[in-house]
Length: 205
Image 1 (spheres, rainbow, N blue to C red):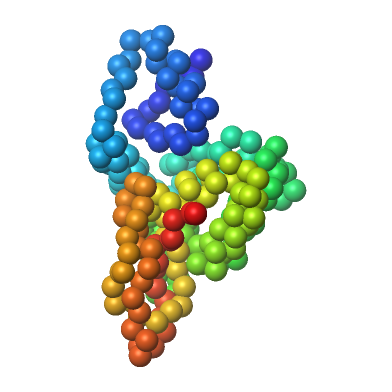
Image 2: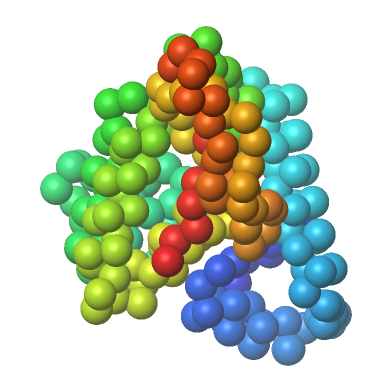
């Protein structure tokens, strides 16, 4: 039997969704069918509440539960590995996530570096690490639907950002995102001095 779902949670993996639906079908809990726009609003509200709760609690690893993609030990919030060589059955995908988790330049929630403060409930990494993560998943993804799912969950939701040294941004030329809009192409001030900035991430394709 599945554990009770506190408050709200978002599940992207089809197998988990199917298990939850089967469990709800045999219970008295109602299942509501909503339009895509309503679903997006609900998911955004769910993440916004989680972020608000995180900011209003003392920093603690228990504030957010470990949500790990099935078959991996590193793909998700935190990891459940016993060591660097401990990978799940989806070894190639998990190795990509592990290397990304070990990015030498990142900002934990509440940390400040390069004059950038991470106010989100998620770790923010240097854009170079994210690009390496994308390339790793895309290479594995040639024969792995799981790699595409992990990539979409991280890059295409619009929930995560990265930072790097770049020319000042002037605006955004293109927007996209599954849960919230994220800039896909920035317009830069080519005459400005490079500075540390936060960037949205391009969707996983």
